[in-house]
Length: 167
Image (cartoon, rainbow, N blue to C red; front, top):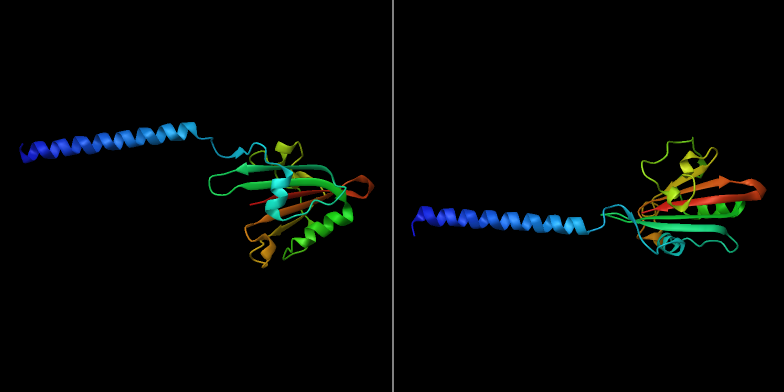
């Protein structure tokens, strides 16, 4: 076999391996769930466990979900409790800035709390917000949490809805 023939044969072999490896990767991509997607069966308890947040006894309308993403999952938790308790929960997150009223913002590009049947908190007039970086404030209780958004929305009768969004 000549050098030219051997070289052509190696090029054909390399090209066929490349094509077959790409088509296998494409098949895998088609069979995997597209991101993001909502974890089946994951709810409020999984979100509360990840955030290391205790849902207060007597809280109502407790809802949660986990959204799977390629790099990190996102956890959502919401419940209704007394307004004072809601503020205590927000303060326990140890934000560098106190919870404060945030101007009404645009809704997110995708459904987040809407997945739980709730309005997006940043669209609620009068909602108070704080952003927390647990590693930045040395909150070792939440070592695996990179960020938490907490919204408190006051309701009638001394109640408030707490929204927690973390990754």
